[in-house]
Image (cartoon, rainbow, N blue to C red; front, side):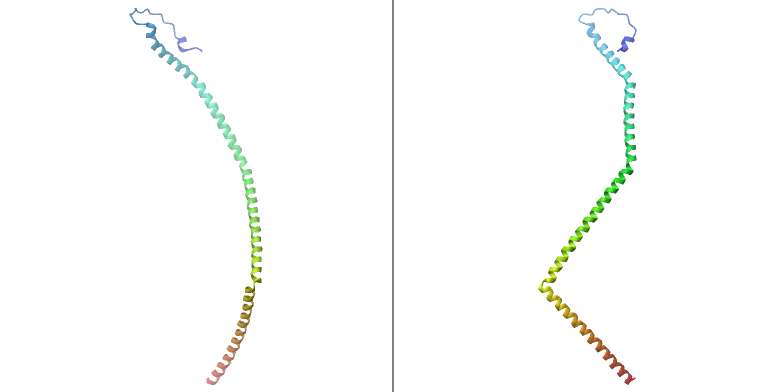
Length: 163
């Protein structure tokens, strides 16, 4: 891999006078490090278009996959809706059958209880008293009707005499 510094023209080496206690190699290290950092950044910047294309390709692939998935979901929607409708219809039918069966059980239970109550002596006595009361009420009604008719005749007769 070539670096930026490989492409730069070679500069002539300059001899600096020696300064006691100064190590020129150590003095050059910070400059070399700075140039190395710049070279590293330049190298990384060169890779950015390729990385951007790679990210773009990945995003495009993900978008297309999501688009295909959504299209499949949209196409499957009518079938899914029909399936849900069938399931709901089955559940409603089962619930209706369960309610009807429960209603029938309650009716049988109520019929048994009514039968037990009717066979009790107190109930039979109450029914007999009720029937007797009905007969007395019918007799009283008949008597009242006769009484009204005779009163009506008496009033008509009195009205003819008065009037």
